[in-house]
Length: 272
Ligand code: HEC
Ligand code: HEC
Image (cartoon, rainbow, N blue to C red):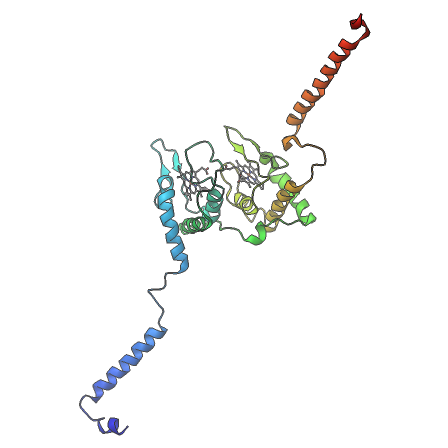
């Protein structure tokens, strides 16, 4: 202390104090200031990673920024993905529909090309283009075996889905060569996302129209269909009167004809 107090009138003392003050202030600032350089969050990294994957696998049809590309004839190579949301990507890529291999009337289900992490990244990228439905909460995409929920789901399914997907989810044909696929083995999360995003001819059933709870009921109903024992005998694909009529005609009429012929050959007169 003596050392300092004897030199406090030294001509450089003021300078030393100012420098000391600045150093302390600078140190404190760097301790408490927001880290600008690290502000890129994990979310941004995911989006960037997704953008890179998108540029390689999807941009040829959907455009560099997902804005969609038109052919010379004005039809789509790929539609705009702005606002379709993470749910659409998770559905389309998760069921193997995207990347589309070739333009056809309908994108068919194929073996999945990307792994879960890659799909998540691309979904984050597309979600960053514009607000859209996000990937649904697992709470509502897992099937329940609660009989009340299953029967409620059955009601929703019969009113909203059977017109295209058939009463047991076996699928069916639609006009112009399109079809509603069989959905009896569809995973809960894809059932939810299909309703949320309405792929192709399928209408959108937003969460305002069918609430997440009711969507879970539908998922539970579809799962129950899969596990249901076939009380009425073989369901013949669940296609209804056509396959049942054909079976009745071929087996029923067939055995009648065989029986008639047999009786004819065994009759008393034929033995004479
Ligand atoms: C060969 C062209 C092509 C490629 C490659 C392609 N798509 Fe598509 N995509 C299409 C077409 C055409 C449609 C519209 C028809 C349909 O929905 O089946 C579509 C539809 C979509 C949709 C649904 C949009 C909506 O309105 O719900 C999403 C999401 C999508 N693509 C994501 C992707 C992603 C992600 C990739 C890359 C992994 C990709 N696509 C690669 C052509 C392509
Ligand atoms: C107007 C006809 C129509 C109605 C109504 C409809 N869908 Fe669909 N659905 C389709 C078509 C068409 C596709 C195939 C889309 C594609 O291939 O891109 C589809 C696809 C699906 C898929 C995807 C299956 C897979 O292979 O991955 C599920 C799950 C599904 N629908 C569930 C439902 C549910 C649940 C309802 C009722 C709430 C419903 N759909 C109502 C036409 C319909």
